[in-house]
Structure formats: C-alpha cells, structure tokens
Length: 112
Image (cartoon, rainbow, N blue to C red; front, side, top):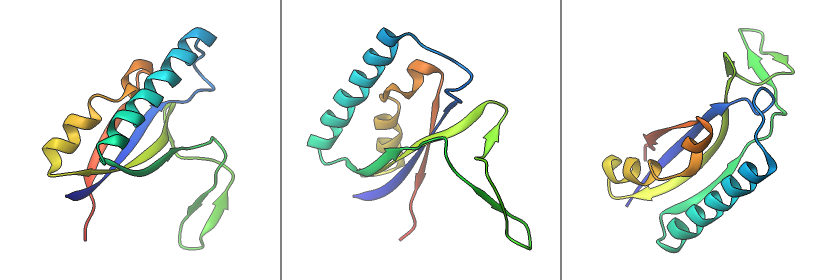
C-alpha cells in the first residue's frame, strides 16, 4: 500500500450558508464515508481545519493573522489515505461528500 495526501478545498464557510438540515445531512454523509473507508483500512488519519491560522511569508518570515485563500476558496481539511496506487486513491476520493457543497479534492502521493 502507498500513502496519499488528500487536500480538501472548498468555499469559505463564512461566505456561503446552508440550512441546518443540509449541514446535518452533510455531516452524516461524512461520518458514513469515514466509517466505510476506515473499516477497509484505507484511512490513516486526517482532519477538518478551522478558519483560525497564520501565514508566514518572505525572507524575513513575517507572520500575518490570516489563512491562504484563492478568491473565496480555502483549504478545509486533509486526509491521509492508503491505496494501491494513485488511481485507487482518486477513486476513493471521488466518493467523498466534499462535492456536495462545491468543494473539491486534490490527491497526491507521498514520497517515502
């Protein structure tokens, strides 16, 4: 098995709101998804990320109280995934609930 990092990008939750029912259904879909692939031994870790963070930039390592955004898009979380190859990792990632709220996933193989 190889190790993969899945980076979840999504619209900033401060700019788009969903109903309580939509949020509950979305959270349940994530729970079920994690249970399924956790039982199969495909998930090695991961987490959602808060909107609290800092960026360090430049030659002088200046610290700013912000997170990286592209327009209204943020990195919302990450997942450590185990799969035979990149194709299997992508097939697993394409079934996750990130797409329900206009997010997307990037799958990258980790170097040894």
